[in-house]
Length: 146
Image (cartoon, rainbow, N blue to C red):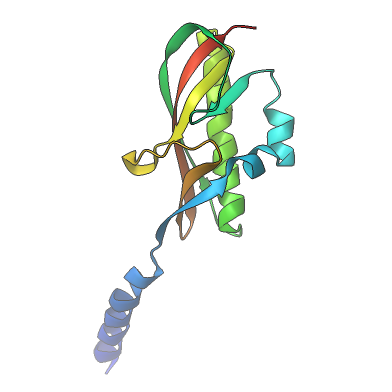
């Protein structure tokens, strides 16, 4: 009888396990993510970030194209909160890359989650799972004319 119950539990877990998995891709507002108190506090080195085809001043030096892939624990957070946190982590990575490369901006920033390119001046793509959220960006680190 114990063996029968054990197998019933295993079968139930196998059936319901995949239903618990989640892999959603959602679009969120760049403006909203850049307006969080954490973003305002931490993205404050005077660097410029331009998404999609947003206009910018003349590029005087191109330091290369770089990728930023960041994930965060989504447990206890709404999808939007988790994605805004992953967004900030990715932007902080870009901020560090600007400093390392000697530029002053990242332009042409576009979402590249799971190698799916989305170029938008207003929205970014984020992957929401059951316990992890992730953001991947590609952008050009440059020096813009003052």
